[in-house]
Structures are given as C-alpha cells and as structure tokens.
Image: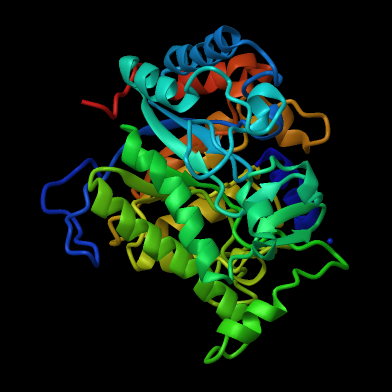
Length: 407
C-alpha cells in the first residue's frame, strides 16, 4: 500500500460497545470495537516480512515473532497480516500455491505454516490477528509462464488480464468471484482469525494510456447496466456482499473490514463527497462504492487510508476524518483511520512529515470525532524502526497503557 499511496500523492496534485446498539441489515446488533491500535504487516515484495525470500523456517518465524513483540512493545492490539498478496498463500491452501515471498519459488513448501503460527502467537500476546487478503491481484508482472505450473491463472488463462505491468483476475467473471471467495474463505474455515481484511485494490488503479480489456465479459454479463462503470461497481458490490454473508455463515464472530483509498468522491463530482480535490476517486476509478458498503452495513469496519498530513491542500487529513465520521454515523460500522507512518522523515514528503509530532496530532484531532474507533499504522517495518521517533512520540502521547481487544 505504501507504493500505492506514494503514487496517489503524485496523482492528487496534477462509543464503547453498547448492548442493543445499531442493528445491521442482517438483523444483528452491531457492537462497537473501540481503541483499535493496529499495524499492517505487508508480505508483497517482502515489504515488511520476511525480510527476504529463502530464509530458513526458523529465521522466518523469528522475524515474524519479532514483529508481534514490537506491536506489544508499542502498546498496539491488532496485527493485520498479509496472507494472500498475489493470488498465493501463506498457509497450506488447497486452492493456491505457496507464496514466492517465502522461499523465492512460488509453490515451494516453506516447511511451516506462517498463518497458523501468526494466529497462535498473536493471541498468546493478546493481539488480534486480522488476515489480510488481496482479492484480484495475480502477479507483479505480466508473464503467466512465471507462475507455478498448477497456478489457477495458468489453468484458467481466460480468467486473467494484464494491466499496468501486473496480472489481475477479471472481476467481471462470476467464476472468478466464486473462486477468489473460496480461496480466501479457506483460511476463515481453518484458522481462528479475528477478521478478514481487504486493502484498496479492486479494479486496478488507472494507468495513463492503458485499457483494462474486459469488453468481452461486459458484453456477456453487462446487460441492464447503463454503462461499463456501473457494471464494474456492481461486480465489486457483489464480491463484498457475498463474502460478508459467507464469512458470517462460517463464523459469525469473524469480522470483515476493508481499508480503501481515502477518497470516495470529491464534492465537485458528487455533493455527498468530501471537500477534496483528489486525482483518484474510489467510486469512479476503482469501481468501489466504499460509502455504500458502510451505509448498507455489509462490512464490520472500514479503515480508509488517510495518508496525508493535516492541511494538505488536495486531501486534508482533518477534512477527511470529519467526512468519514459522518459516513459511519448511525450505521454500526466501525471507523479506523489508516495512518502513513512510512511517510515520517521521508525526504520526498512535504514539511509536515519531517515533524515527529505530525502523527500524534492526527490522533489528537481524531479524538474530537466520536465515530473514530482507532487507528492502523502502515507499516510494521516503520513501527519497528521508528523514523524520526514519530511512533515513540505517538505512543507516549496517546497510548499510556495497553488496550486489549481480546478478552
């Protein structure tokens, strides 16, 4: 997500749980989960973990445990662990191959079960474990021959489209939506995870001069929609709605959360949108109606990536917190703010990110909005390395003692 957030920055510029709380459309009372303090652990391209492919099982396990111990040290209470980065798996999946980010070779057994270990060791430390899946991304390249021989994308080449230097499953195919749900829900069925978590990738971010070639699927399935964009949004809606129902059918206590790009629509595009001038809008560009998912109660929490500083002209953190607070009000859907810890001290970022107090100010500001139930930090490498001392400052200012979500 850091790479995406960096790209988006460029594009931007051209109550405590209450019994009998709000009732969702499924008839269930929703109970607020307050004071989430989360950290993302990204495995794609070995961003946070493991530090490189090909480490021994013991080395990989030790590095993972170190991230969990750091989360405890920083007084956090939830770890969002990426277990399906590129249509692969960090558990012994019957649907998809072992991730190449473990051994360097897709499909090669690493000799241990990272997800099973993460769940067990996180819970032993009083941490929630949110299993983070990417639904449609197949590869960080466009060559299917580089995938393992039995990869579903090679077995079903008609499922896959190249775009922007990557391979994606086509969200417009019902068989694709069914397969990716089965692949993800295998982990829900087999492990004691606390939540299913998706990030901001649905239809891919726009790439200038390139076309996502789904005309054939649109011709086959798009009847009754006013245009392709509406059909694409419906495809994404179906994935969210169907997955939510299947999670609750499998395990009613497993939560479903999504962390989208922080701008649904600009107010200039839609009066219901935020006072922003973002170059990307999830509704229009990613075909993800994130606001609808909250209003319909399809998800348990939303964690928008508000990866900008207070006062940033195109997308002001303060204005977006206010907007999202209004969106969740009365829905029973929890709001956790995604925070760009990785920007602290980055010389490519504007002056506010050179101030170790910027993130602490975010949490101070968010306290004025009752809908904000916590924060999640991108990402584990920076939680550990603490650039500028920004994490230490935040913990000192706001996390005086540990706050547990688990019983």
